[in-house]
Picture 1 (cartoon, one colour):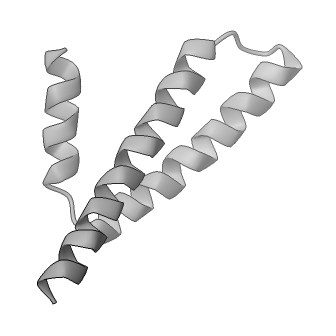
Picture 2 (cartoon, one colour; picture 1 turned 30 degrees about the vertical axis):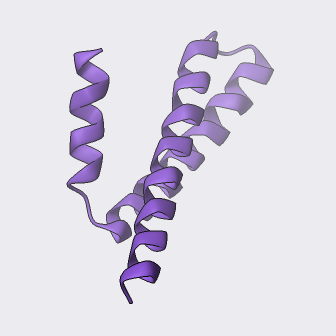
Length: 73
């Protein structure tokens, strides 16, 4: 639990641009992982699931920041 909290704090400290770069990196990693999983080269269903959730968390943060900027403008 503390590990996820630390990760969330690290993400909150990142700029929106850095978060978008992180999403791109995670999506590429997710693509590679899914490909390897389908070929049977790896058995990392948990890793795929965690990366997918991380992408969703980051996209949620970016959306919140965007909405917050729109309401303050």
